[in-house]
Length: 401
Image 1 (cartoon, rainbow, N blue to C red):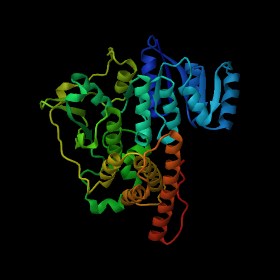
Image 2: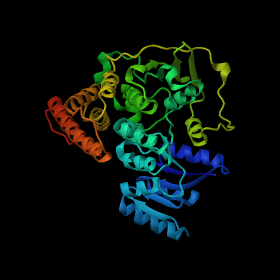
Image 3: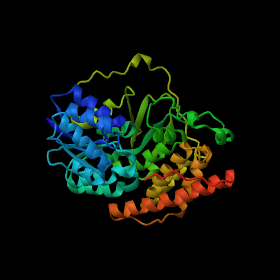
Image 4: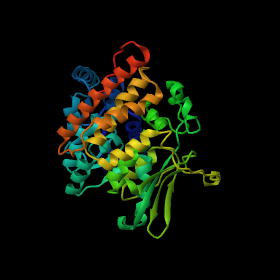
């Protein structure tokens, strides 16, 4: 029986993880949940799974949840809150495996502390590895515990790498759907609406990751994540646009052999793989191979999608540059969603913040969070300036913590 903690239990990855646990009750026990700000979902999950501990974002919500659980006869469930509460969930002594799925840097400290506590961690939060991947992977090596990717692309690479040794790897290929604007002329980008940008052709995801997919920043983050997870330089991580999203990733070996992984587009599959590694167990998620008739591949256009270029440059520089990249993107995407900037202004804000950031390496999570806060402040200033320049009227920038 594997005892599981979920950071981000009310999000899509968290819910999918609970679905996997429900399908294999003899294998998984849900011990701890960090549920964020969705109080109703947190209550329902606590009532269904009866974990030892539940964390929510706010103290007031923790008080409400505690009262509701007591009324439901579940007063033995400990309720905590905030960043410290998420750390309590991630480091609970009964937990074997932690699923890191809190969106953004909000899950960074808890993920790092889980690794430091010797837990096996399944990483679905790419921002943790973008902002602090060098620290997290170094700590995992010290602990002798694997970091298991849950993102479909990196999970696919992990599976392909079982076919050879790391020193035999020539390069890895991350596939990208190309997003909703693959065939949209760059000249039309200034008029792209929020509704259009949220209409992803393949996946149903949260708003930020969907916009990141439309700008190809999501693929840029995945390049950085791959460099950290698999200890490869950016030059050995390449992106291929593959609109069918059938092949999730490929690994090319030094002899020219290429292994590719494809499967159903269902996040329960990579979650199950991570939870049961190094085993593979029976599931009902089957890919209809008979439908495999046509596959397209093309290189990404980095002039049209400059966010991908910025990610490669930040990956090469490392340290504070990748922190600034992530922070600026989060602020810029929030500003676009709120109507404060245009779609084509997202990469402009990100580039200005990355260029202004320091190149130094960061030696602790505290330094990462400090660099993150500084980059956010500058990005919010750039949003205000850009909005005022275009409209002539100041408008409050979206504050993304």
